Length: 107
Image (cartoon, rainbow, N blue to C red; front, side):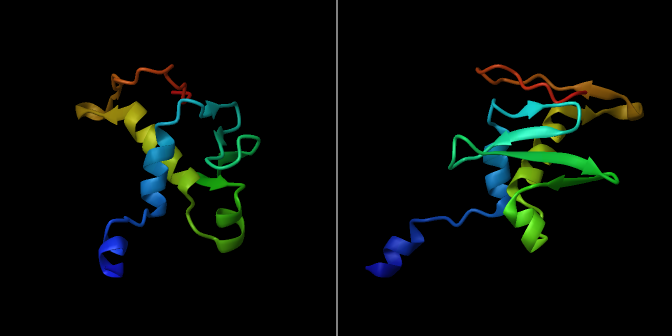
């Protein structure tokens, strides 16, 4: 019986969590990076920015464990969805089907 219960739950990876976060309409693009609201604490926000062409975050996971965190994954996914490469190296903004306000990713 215990094995049945365990198999009902899926363990989410950082990338899975990043996909979920990337759909959040409250991600804010600033002049220096992106502000991402915490999933657990409504008063906490994380800041993702580029340092030497690499996305960095100020969360515990990124700073102390040196792992690519869910916030960095969220921005990578959101940027990939916002800008799509087409033939000839031109950039094309993809049309989103989101019902909430669109997020400005600065492109």
